[in-house]
Image 1 (spheres, rainbow, N blue to C red):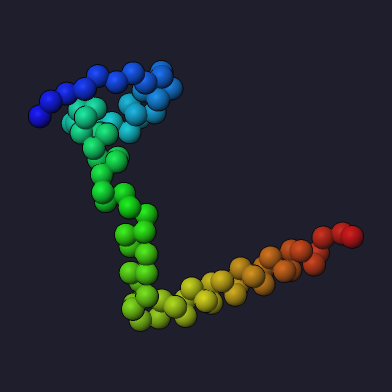
Image 2: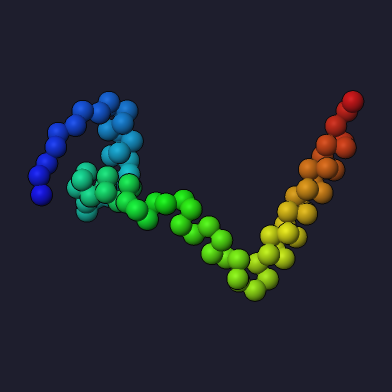
Length: 77
């Protein structure tokens, strides 16, 4: 496998270094952070078939909606 040299800012280097694990190279860090498993949509909907999940989400949403309404009603004006 060949190599490439890139130029990044000090800020970008510092951020990358913060993500680097002690047992990995910068190449391994970049590959880990940018790998295909970082697809945000990959797990979308995966909990849909879990028993009680939909009800739990709807219940929590309703509780949050009620809380927001109560707080909004209490505002002056």
